[in-house]
Image (cartoon, rainbow, N blue to C red; front, side, top):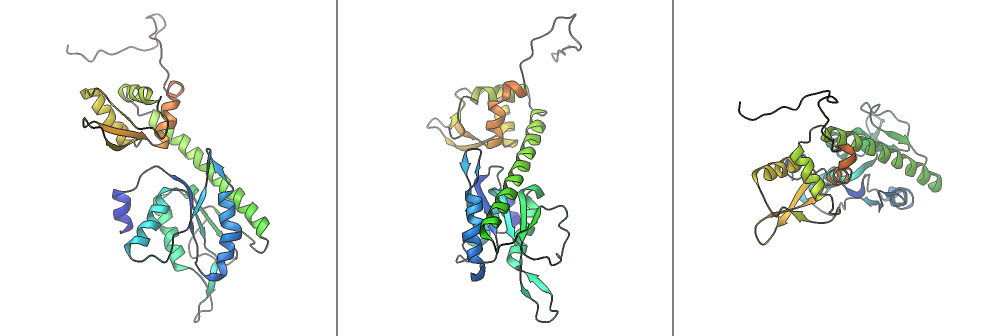
Amino acid sequence: MHPNSFLRTLWRTEFRSEVFVAMSFAGALQQRFDDVIKPAIESIVHHGRKLTANRVDLSKTGDSILTDIVDGIAHSELVLADVSTVGYDSKSGGPYRNGNVMYEVGLALACRHSAEVLLIRDDTHKFLFDVSTIPHKHIDFSDPTAAMTTLQQELMGRLAERDHLLDARILTTVAQLTSGERNLLQTFSRYGPEKVFWLTKTGLSALAAISRLLDKQLIVTVGVTPEGQATFRWTRLGYILATNIETLVPTVAEPSVAESDGDGTDLGDE
């Protein structure tokens, strides 16, 4: 599937507990993945879940591998790309980097925040593009233990920054909540992150609020009940928001006229 088609139709804001790894499959680099990259990733527990390394199997062909690549880039916690030079051009003598990896880096930078992408390399050659805004790290892989520790720390730093981005998105979402959406979030907050829930009564206001929660990607549709009611599950953003709704959007007691700094507005017919 073409990346643009995938991102327009299948991209979700939910992320799997994995790090997508873009790197050359050259045999000489397999040990780097086995001894440094994979153990560094899988030594990290983020929000109670152990991360795994997702390296797409190049034995696949056609649309299948491209779909797996775009899906991994779009839905992993982070994207890690080893952009080390892999050889020298026979005509210019200049170093070059793996073309497939650079393509995946381009996809990642197109659909993810730069804080969610980490570039690593073992060379000091000049890049063909400006990486000043992209987190990148030179790593000496000759010492696997030290390299693994360095990479682990860099990944944890990226995850911490990503959490700050999530905090900012929560505040933005809170600022746009209606009372109907808030009430539904509070009602559904008793359900855990993996639980499925639905409305037993569907008035127009509730249906409108559900539609807006779906648009804001706070919940996702997962099926229907035998009676035909749509069933939902939390996204990570939605669950965090719902379980903290009383703090983020507190219920405010209506002040007396003497205490009030503002006026309630009656939107009824005059």
